[in-house]
Length: 343
Ligand SMILES: *Cc1c(COP(=O)(O)O)cnc(C)c1O
Image 1 (tube, rainbow, N blue to C red):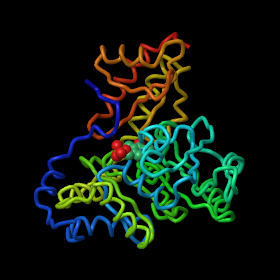
Image 2 (cartoon, rainbow, N blue to C red; image 1 turned 180 degrees about the vertical axis):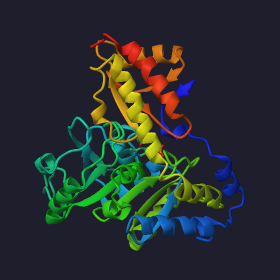
Image 3 (cartoon, protein in one colour; image 1 turned 90 degrees about the vertical axis):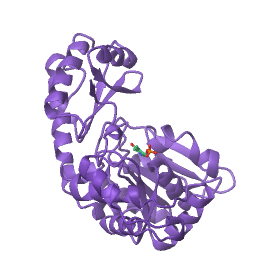
Image 4 (cartoon, rainbow, N blue to C red; image 1 turned 45 degrees about the vertical axis):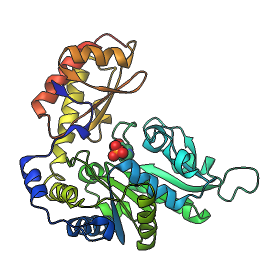
């Protein structure tokens, strides 16, 4: 089986397991786990922020970041395909009274004009006030797309001018960094809070990080405990993340090359399903044409390829270090064959 459902499927390597087994640990609720402290300091520095808070999931990291910027009854605005809007089970509203409103784009990358069109800071007694803008980079359901730095800068200028904060869901910011060569801190500087995940292409078994200023992180730490997500010898997981930072960042370029090779193989048979020039990182979105995405997924599975759906007609393939380049090419030919003639 060639499993391209997600880059979360990666299993810890032997080297990573060794680093986990040998990790120095302490009680992180007391702030005494040296490996967690090291990971928090290192990640914050990479992103150009003062402090970090290690969390079990990216959803929790996003939840705490947005909680720190948006009061109950205020809104965060984001893309219609944003992970915070679609894949976090309404947590921002259910737990923190945060309202969400979305702009519509094809690739998850809303322009400054689109955002200016819906932003309503200090809206008064009738409309919901916008407290934060949330961007996602790379954009998962947008197809692994990369936010151009110039757009981020223009959006930051818009937000700063009207007192609106910014949160980055950088679950796959590593992929954007590797694909463009842009330093992580160059992305990080435009945001008040940033989430990054170690459990996607970096290959750690679990763990994400919220970074921000020291004050915000101190507040987020209290809220994390309030949500029941304080943890003890989390250094075992922090060690996996540190190992991933040392060994698994640069190799993501191989995942990007494999995604392109997969897309080119699909396009050989079904050119209407994918424009390979649109592949930016490790995620490929295929148009299922007159088939439903669920039909394509079922047929692919019978042919030993696993894919996922991100829309009724949108099939997603994600490359990662547990699949080889050759397997991705093979999968592309299989899936291309299934999509052939279905426009
Ligand atoms: C995976 C992911 C997250 C976090 O997911 P968890 O499963 O909660 O760790 C957040 N944002 C995006 C865009 C993601 O792809």
